[in-house]
Image (cartoon, rainbow, N blue to C red; front, side, top):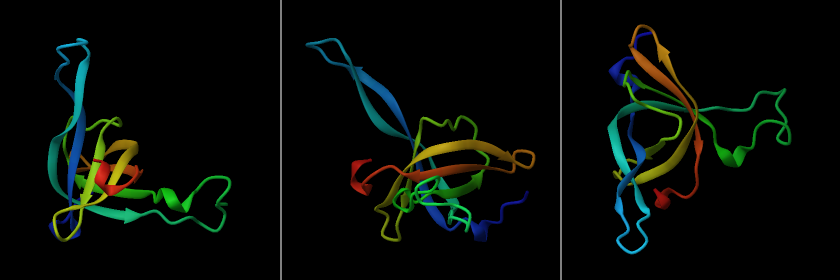
Length: 122
């Protein structure tokens, strides 16, 4: 599966939750979302089919989407994807629901994502 540059129309950041230090008073880990990678991707919303019922499988407010991008090793399901808007600010903050699935022979990867919450919490 060949990904064409013209199809990759959304700028994204992949974020990872990392330990950045320890609390001096309680000696607990201090964690923060940090950028793992950035690049361009194709983000397509997944629409419910006629057979899907809102109660059973798909909730429209979760806004599931399929994300395709160039191959990148190290992407895990516990990471977040931030889709940037045209102004460069976060438009969507998403959790990875499924994937990554390899497309072709390391041509690209595909992730199933859904909105995590407000765009300003990531």
